[in-house]
Amino acid sequence: MSTILADLNYWVTVFLLVGGLYIVVAHGNMIKKLVGLSIFQTSVYLLFISPGKILGGTAPILDDKYTLYSNPLPHVLILTAIVVGVATIALGLALVVRIHESYGTIEDDDLTDLESDT
Amino acid sequence: MIAAHLPALQVVVPLLAAPLCAILRQGTIAWLIALVANWCAFVISIALVLQVRELGIISYELGGWAPPIGIEYRVDLVNAFVLMVVSGVGAVIIPYARKSIESEIPRAQRGWFYTMYLLCLTGLLGVTITGDAFNIFVFLEISSLSSYVMIAMGRDRRALTASYRYLIMGTIGATFIVIGIGLLWAMTGTLNLNDLADRVPAIEEARPVLAALAFLTVGISLKLALFPLHLWLPNAYAYAPSAASAFLAGTATKVAIYLFFRFFFTVFGGGGFFDSTPLPEIIMVLSIVAMFAPGVVAIFQSNIKRLFAYSSVAQIGFITLGISLASEPGLTGALVHIANHAIMKAGLFMLIGCIVFRLGSMRLEDMAGIGRTMPFTMAGIVVLGLGLLGAPATAGFISKWYLAEAALLQGLWWLVGLILLGSVVSMIYVGRVVEIAYFREPSEKVAGLKEAPLSMLIPGWVLVIATIYFGLDTTWTVGIAQDAAASLLSALY
Image 1 (tube, rainbow over the protein chains, first blue to last red):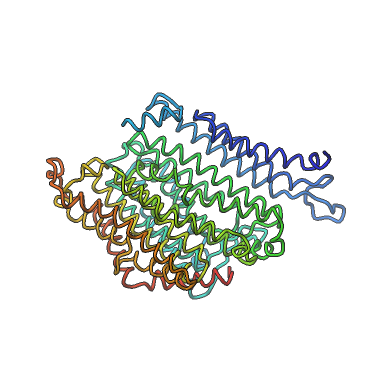
Image 2: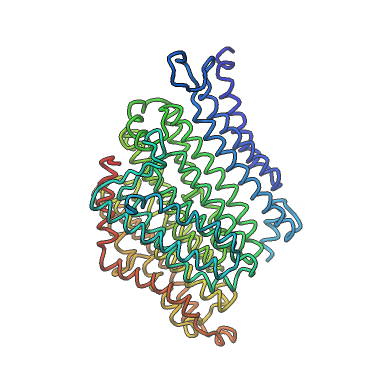
């Protein structure tokens, strides 16, 4: 039990990762797929941020008083990754709007039928 | 002075040109900007190749921060070669794009197309040139997001669903890559590829490192459309605007293949992962299936762009096969085929774009007898098709020769047979196109067609001639690729 709690961040990461991916694969609705994709990407944020935090650590200041500090790098990386994630979801949603305009549906199965007709 | 900053300029020139296109919006001006930026990038990449050959590896400190803390652009022969291929293919496509885009994209959106094109070029060049693992992810997403938009601009409404499906698959792939990079970072505390290469061998037994390798392999395989992760590719190439199809088919998957080289042989190269894990066997089996299954599917396609899109998946199989052999001729073959296939496939999609421009249809049945009314276009397609199946005196022959040599070197006789058999499959689908175009009576519609406009035909033929040229004189392909392969195997980066 204690090991699970010690690595709680990583368990949550794995849960979000697998859950998000499952939603992408299992759902036919294009909006739901994007929700899944978003959850899937969120897991990565946690994966990067977790090892960057050290309990009792300070910001990295070059001074004799501070010896234990947290790595600021993952925060910077994940800010970038969040931006990429937002752009991806925005583009995905824009595509869904266009798909709805031209097909009248956003269900994967219906779309496959419509596509094979034309 | 400028020569010292070439690595940065390689990425910055198209990156700055992109918002310029977006602001000006007007199609022709945007096209001119894209043309100039792309040609600048091509000239820079050639200068980089020459510099690397003369002086060895170039390390460029971005913003003056020394690696491994700062971001480093690191150019060796391998990525200089890929940079040249990517920007070169783009440089030929851009003059072609103008007429093709005018016929396929509404006036108001043309400026956006060139913006997206330049961003895609920026991303691809960035992925290739950077020496920083997280940078790879960011540039990869820049190129992917812009290619989703380019694909969605296709006239057919199926372009939208193709783009959406590519977005889902591409994002999963990119996320897998970033998970792999994250695990590597957590284990080593560095993101610099060169630094990673130093630190990974010491911890090669650690499970997170193996997990990182697995995530990276799957993620990159999705991006390069390795069988069976290729499902996004056929529709994306088929329904994108012709110029975008040609550009993506020529470059996007090639850059992902470059990542295979970089991660397998540079980052994980020192640890002997390639021998201690079943990775080469897995890639070899998938490559062999890729050489056949999509090739057979291609034979039965009724849409000519989809046919050649499936053929792309098959040809990617040949490239990854070279990687899985992990010997000098194997890697040489793979690298040369990156260049040759980029030239041939971009050329094919451009000439098919010429047909679509005149005929307005992508259906093979509608193209009966088109060899008589559009002789130059069809002749080009035939030559490039011969290149695909590896006929002697074409570029395709050279790459397959090296792959066969690599297989022989390891005593894999059956593999040589399979490589030949794979070429036979391509012969069938190319043959089918030739049969329809030349040996059938032209319909009324086809009989009234004119040859494609010169501004589209000439760029296409430049690549046709390049296919023949690189089949005869290989100093710029094999010459560089051989040295590059040697440097990869000695883990010199």
